[in-house]
Length: 375
Image (cartoon, rainbow, N blue to C red; front, side):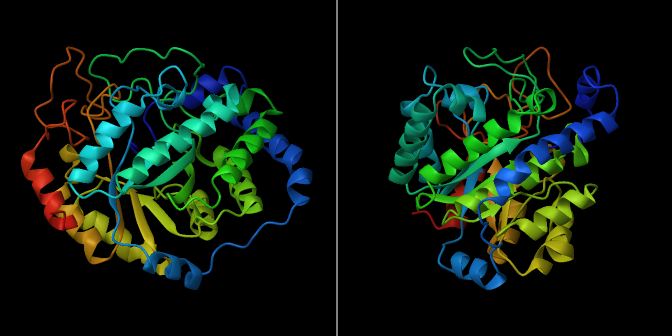
């Protein structure tokens, strides 16, 4: 989901509230301190060993799928709020995914949808899992996210901005974690409630605890929440592994922590095949743990199905590309090249299917079916 370390200076917005980064860092430290006593009261399980991680992964087929949001939703809130949750749309679209051999989806949750209606939220998550399971699809759930818009509210969501990639996608928790020192307590309740509800659900492949920590200019300011979320997850001790994907080589401290704390290794790579292969060879395989690529495929950057999928299959690296169906997310448009006049770009950036279920490029869907062995 990254244009590397976002060129959009969202950290400046935060500085209008807190004048410099030192204050921001101190506030994060205070937030972390608030939770320290509570966290220490319950024992955390250990990070999975290489042996346990590989034994878990050996039981799985090669996983291929997409980062998924229904075409009818502009963001995570529109997907999960009661008034806009669309089970019929999800069923239809996951049927198209099943039809080309996909068996996994990565799906973003949002704490605000839970906060408004915890019981209803979990019921909708279960409904989604029932639909996905019917289509033979496991799910990677994402708990937090540092990408795109840093403010949001419950209720009706904005309409897409014409020709702008992910114009309505929202961070989680975004600015709230800066503005309210007690907000960590609410986030802890969210994480533990959701994980406890689904801790032994075999329809869930793994928990991606934090998407692209440090993005949107946050860098190491995301570390306290990242640490807390891993800790909260280990206190619940779900049967599924916990992970947070490496996405930028510039974030050395975050990367080291993510690789150390993840039960299995997840990562994002939107580069051409040679660079993607170097990532695999240079540091990812050194962990000795299973690899899951949770974001790839950006056509105009040279990250293409017919070149990347064979690499991932060779190494039995699970392959999850960004985008299934073109819709309100506008991810057919590239990160940094909006088309204010709208219209269809000559080359789609992400996504596989048009809203009516026909493929953007039939050669791609034929290739995905072939490489997944879909009859």
